[in-house]
Length: 124
Image 1 (cartoon, rainbow, N blue to C red):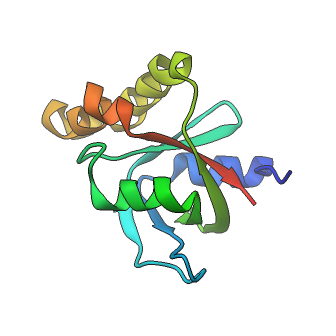
Image 2 (tube, one colour):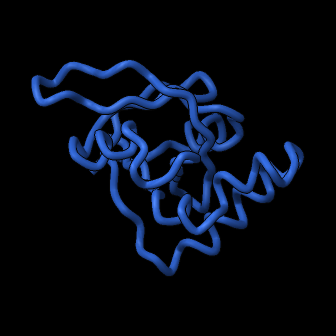
C-alpha cells in the first residue's frame, strides 16, 4: 500500500485549499472542486462544507477513488470513511488551521453535518 512521504504530508497539510476530484465509472476524472482539508498525524482528511448530500461528496463515496492537488502535490487517492473516534481530532485540526477565517466560515467544516461527511485520503 502506498503512503504519503514526509514531504507530501508537509506540503499537502499546509495547503490552505485542496483541489479534489473523483473518478467516473469509465475511469476518467470529473472536474476538480476546491475544498479545505487537514493533516492529522500521517493522514489527510477532507470534509464537505455543504454536507453529506453534496454532489461531489456523494460521487467520491460512490467511486471510492480520485485525485488531489494541494501544496504542489498531485496524487491519486482512495476515499475512505474514517473511524468515528477520530472526529474530534480532525475537528480540532480544522479549528487550528482555519479559525482565522471566522466562525461563520469555519463552522461549515466543523458542524455535525460536516463531521458526518469526512473522508480520509489514502494515496495510491
